[in-house]
Length: 487
Image: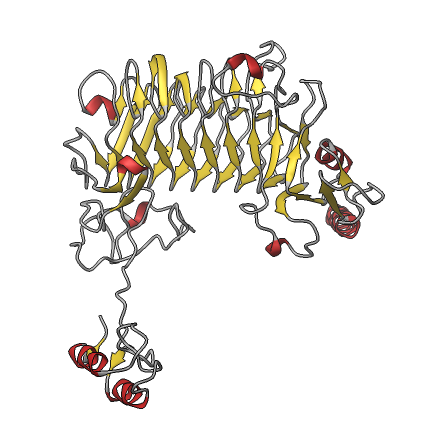
């Protein structure tokens, strides 16, 4: 009887799942549309107006997708407490021009889709008072793990309200109590709060952030970008944190037994302005992070820990770079400083660190640090020096979404594993393809076939090697000089 009961339950569950799939719908949103029936059933009849995204997200049920055209969306014309609510198993996609029939056709870069907290349109980053009438939160999360927000800019949230109702936390998003959705390809810019988490506040929730930018967010007391507390386990992959600030933890704060996983991320120009320290990252209260292939540079703390400051728990840093951060104390104090917490650091380039398996203490030779390019020069000591076994399973690309394992012939292999050896830091140095213009047929070899093509195109342009528009003796000279295999 027990087996039969379980089978019936399984059948009922499958039936419900099938019914949900059959009932799933795509809802269309276009803020700038002025015609149609305004019911979200098609691009022609999309929900329209500044509050149309709020309308669509409220109407969506589990299994639905919301497709959103370029434009600016606000949860309310004037009420600060109203926000967009992300439901479980509802997927919200920005970046459409309007008219697309497939997700692959959208372009979030060309079609800026913004969720704004600037209800009256008067924001001025230089004047804090202009944010006083902004939305407290742009997105609040409902319980669940299957919600998705993909392809949006989230700007201008200002959580400066009452602490008892959490209106002082999470200027852009707030996730409380088992609300662990995914945010992908989103830009969190110029959001603010007074307590913690300029971009987001996480409490007992463990969302994922993939390919996101967090820029110029202000976290008040804790976490310029995020304040995470009470056993959160957030995931950050291929994210950039720049220009964020708070009194403690310029970019990320992890408190209360949190266990973050941070991979292929870049932290630069973040600032801890108060006594708590941690220019980029602060860990405390038994929190333990897993950090792989991150680059932490040009961050600053007014008091302690210009880069990473670990005050509690046991964290691991492998294949990381923490170099060129500033603050009081010794150089080592501004790389990865542990005071009350334990940091296990291996196969990393950390300024001032002279011990640990595979570690180095050398200028990482960024491509153009002054210009904000923290990719590695081909002569960098960080190339081919990481630990292959520490790269998380399934991670095959770097912050640029280029190949994560690339062997650079000019760099002697070090680190751990079989070639190709992973680089330290968030970017993997890529092979430079040397052009071979004399290889006219693209065979990889300059040979008699290419010579025949030059002779056959004599006095015309079809055999031109040097790009001057004429096939002549100079082209033959270049071809003979390059004879053999291309580099």
